[in-house]
Image 1: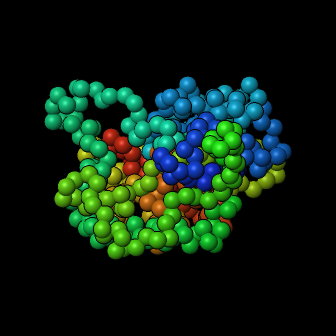
Image 2 (image 1 turned 120 degrees about the vertical axis):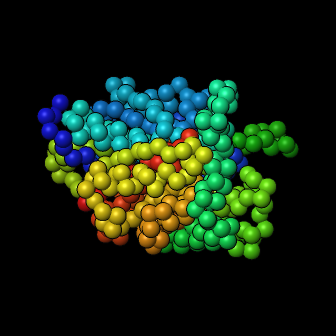
Image 3 (image 1 turned 90 degrees about the vertical axis):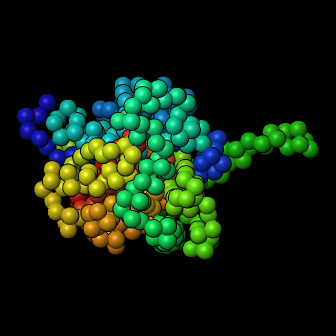
Length: 398
């Protein structure tokens, strides 16, 4: 173990395209299959790296049950064909799980416990329901002090919208902008460098011949952005969570499937291979807020991580603020007076989707490749987290 804290670097990062749930392109593709794919592909980006040298694989997953249970990290490692000597650990902090995996990987490198760790995230909302398959503890309802834990995320966003006075028109305009930015980014090839296309196999009966027809489709494009989105269309949608509310399916993040992985290494590894990393990891912070105001979490996590890293808000060039709901994203922007031009320049989860525990790893791939491409220095990935938390991680482009 090193006696001094050392830097940790993102050597490589990749992701799948994000599919819609529950009837999208990955509806029959298991989350461990998606995970195995990105593990293989991120290692393929560094062909001189012997996979047997990977010290650990840490995978974020918000609902680690059923198809993504059984320590999905270790399952993914073995399915990817990595040596049996490579271990795996699944971690869960709901929507920040993928980002938290990057943080844990970086911490192991920084204190000298490891030289090479893969951080990843995977989530199938097609196969696992939003809240999993377990009932909530009845003690939550025993007193008013804990009942906020039981609030659905849509209701927490309604509360945030009311407290920060975010109107329905503002939310719909934000949602439309998310789709427009995402579509423009796709057209410009902004996601190409971070994307690892995956072949998806579908089987269906041929009723005339009685045969099972196998079809293979290469998925290389996020499924969520909708070119037909308009303010008129968004305005027609009814509130989804409260009868007189402002939160609709159109100004909320999309249920999604996807996976991503990043290789985190020490400076010793960089010197050994003589390579330039995508980014340096600067730090991570997580903080709690009232459960019924869950969406405001980034407003406390961002100042905390800036203090930890010695940076100022004006130093940040790129902010990947997960759009769980337009209302909470706008409330965070308003609370911190963030520069809208720096927030989600390629669109956000309203358009691109939010596969829960995978999102932090997916946005890590987006921001590390994007900052290098656009020559930005510092970036933040941040999100609100279920039951009342916020998380934020800072990256420095090399």
